[in-house]
Image 1 (cartoon, helix red, strand yellow):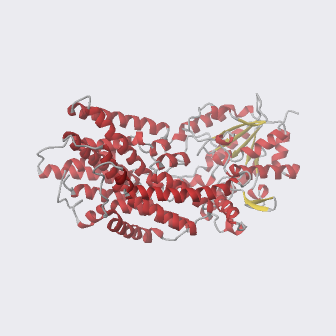
Image 2 (cartoon, rainbow, N blue to C red):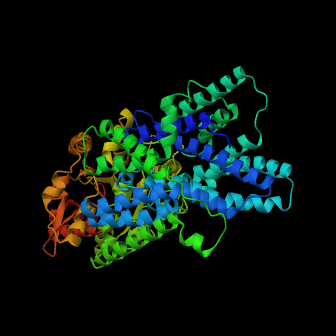
Image 3 (cartoon, one colour):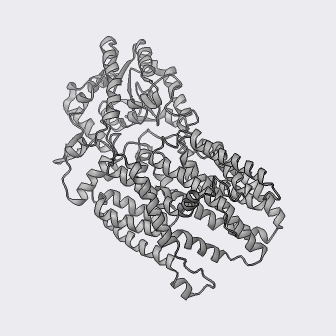
Length: 638
């Protein structure tokens, strides 16, 4: 295929957006859509390679795979190797274990599945994953594996014309499927090959149905429309929108039109800056995210101004000294050709290194008592809190109990994950007092009777949150006692002030004689403090309170203090509202067990199961000195 400067410039337009977004989302709120542009480009190029080979009757699936491996694996392997060496000296043990797992999944092109199973792409924890960005390479590789096989099989039973028509229909169906799946299971859809395949197939349609004999003026207008759509998606879309979904059509259509325009000499794409960045785009993409995580991990100030140039320089050297080295493709399959295939040995070497390190650290972690209890309480751990869209029915979130199960529970726990974190505590106390407690807790659903929500209404948690609130509003009179908690600093998200929503709800409930108890949020800590703790056990170091203190998130904790001041004042004028301060419930941000100092936190925000259980035992030891015990005992029918 003739080298197309417009596509090379389009690569630059994609990678620039992704890099800027990752270093500072405020600069380019929808910069992550650059990955969708990459998918369209890949679909166009791969469809061209496959169809020309099929038309000439010389297409080899094996050679196709080898060519893709030669293109992708060498540079990726070097990034993984550098991270493994760097991590051995500088990362905490638990973080290094995660890195080893992610290296294996990236080299095996399964990282999209691994990252989907761990958390969402935009979660705070994403900045601890050095190879998170390789999910897109895994999606592309899965496309490379499946797409040519399907086309080869179709060629045996239908004409090229019908294959092309089928691909058009499949692209439309794929888009509809993606929109539906994104609305139901957004995290899975973000990382999933089936919900992304239509984007690559859209690029394929640009090859199969090119616009012939377009005038230069028409090409220019077509290109401008395409670029405008791409830039609009970068600036008007943000991580708060469900992705991919119908909005993904904007950058995908934009990339499709730019490719369709086939305009060389464009001032937009065919200038020296865009051409150089386009050539280095794959390597820049590979290196930029580890550079982002490096700045986050070591808490570097103004890192974007340093990290972006570093990413470009590393991308340049990677392109010049790794990508530009051409490994000869297999002209014929034999033991010798496979044995001398260098990308294969890169993968094997990394696999052996990673396996040895993985087994070594895993054995040490498995030796830690109650290791699973360092997670936050959730349905996976046998509790009630969950994330909507994970396959659990809506009704189940409204009927789940902790403590001693009851046909008519008189106590309710209501709120978001910061209420759900208290389930182990209340479960122990409930069993002690022979009480059943209904727990209605789902992600991002702060206690309120309004329709206000931290995220757009398209968010997967919105509909479940509305069901939660409606249920509590219609049934709160059945309860004697209602515990509430939430991520209070979220009240200030995007300039909103939602605290009055909760205060109005409290006043409504308490006016009918039902007691409401406020449970405080733990100290918000930047980074995964439990990872620090577990790593200290593995390395034999001492975990100190200073490790917690220097990571406290001052800004978010100030927001929390504003809310608590309002609630404290409310408790002085409302006898049915009981305010429990953080100092009353927690002496410190850690507890002592078997002579060891252990953080309450599970990951910097929520309380771990172990911490929640320790809190319950402390409350039992305090007995009537703690308001919670008094209230629970007063709420029993005994």
